[in-house]
Image (cartoon, rainbow over the protein chains, first blue to last red):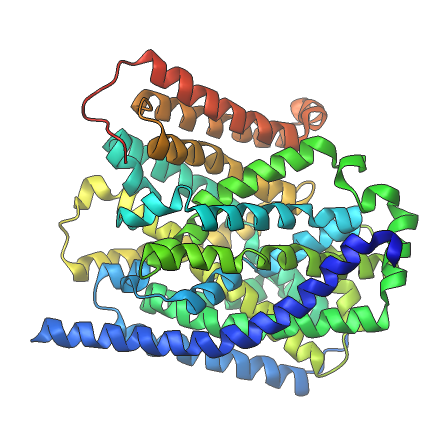
Length: 49
Length: 489
């Protein structure tokens, strides 16, 4: 394990980082979609007026 | 014998497909203009951008070639991912090229290129972008179908049927909802894909074990399995070519740059880059480990591209198999939809520009865009059925990508930062960078020239395309006196 510490460390960081980012982006991304669709709806209403 | 259980795993896959289709079709009601269809009205925020970029840049084809890299070259096969992550981080932090690109308010790269080099170069760059992009994505469907057939243990005669079903599913929501459907489905696909990737990787690390993975690489590949510079099949040529092509991809790859163009502002676009950059390490390393695990478990197989799915078919337990296939379908659908849309956007916005001149009504523009996406889908199906892949998948993808990556990255950099760059240099760069990889591909397919092509190899051919494009830009620009019409972007 120690002879290839670089790849071991990178693999562990990848797994932990990816897991964390997935949870975080899942929560924040859903809010982004909500905001994006709300802004598009507001633009439509403005154009209709 | 595969562990795929049609009742349990099939239900998981079916549920995922149903939710994706509903979400993709639901947002089509927000598409009223061409700008909504192509760049989601430029309303995309950071986290949706991260999810979309990550999902798009990881398809089954990615998983297959990175696993093949791991199987053939060990951990050293993940080098392109590290180089791409570094390029994306630096470009995201500095805003190199992407800041002037997003600030300009264009919808595609050739539109920006026109501001510096004129309408003819815009048209020509649109053609090489589409040529390189479509040749590149031409193998996606077949590779995706092969993975699913192998993992699910289906009869190979259903490969074409599998390809067609996948394509039709993706095409329906992409044609109707454009970039908005792509973004929303990308988000769902990112979550499903990531869960699948993480769970399977943890299973491999626990059940196969890190020590066995390392020992397998040591025994089968040797020290070159950990260090690309001393790997007999990789070496300096590989690393230099990967550094060039991955930097060019970060700057100009249509699906990547589309996220910067769809971002709500320049700062958001740069943040999407910096915060997604490390994903590209995972993008190569995680499937690379799957490939190494296949080598550790199966030993040497005839076709190294099939090793990883053959391994997963019997390694992943029932239940998790459904998650894995849903994850891979998610990865593939997000990639296919985004690729069809973004390359279609170049056809409409740049290649057809002389016809519509930006004056077509929104309804007509939307109709034409939808038609273009459908035509790309048909092309994918025909090309995927016809083309027989020679050599490594990653080599094919980088080589076809080079057709435009070399010239367009040179045009973008020169257009943004070199005042003397002009249309002569741009035209020369486009011709040179397309000619070298196309000549290599033709030689590779010709009996008389195959041995010569092999002696050059894809890495030095790719480096030559980049060097040639840069040189052509400099020489061509210096030959022509400066014109007042050609100003900095």
